[in-house]
Image (tube, rainbow, N blue to C red; front, side):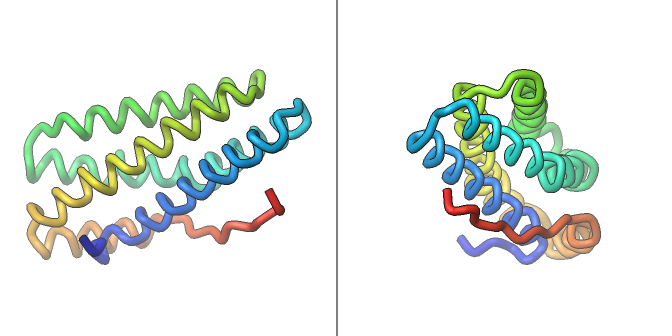
Length: 155
């Protein structure tokens, strides 16, 4: 299904997150040296600080509360918030002691998390929330969303 315009900024951030996963996994397969792992961990931490912190805040402060208000207690919302906390813990681990295993854990969880939001949550709310609610959410999301351009470093 085509993504509703109100959710496009979040979907663009999801695209960037998936790109991070692919680039990280490819690079680890090609070079699992400590120097490359440290470089990849720094890139993941930077992306987290630049974009994911913003993304999680938008979801937890704007989108998820409105879903809960309009659709009642939604078990997927609680699970997604739990995954946010798990991603934060992995980032903390990467700060303390970068490893290929933690980078792979991050990529796996982030990919699954994004697909659940896109394929399950976003599809549902596009169908169930009224147009005026989606439009109001879209204005708030658009005003807060950080937009970045991914750079390729050849890996």
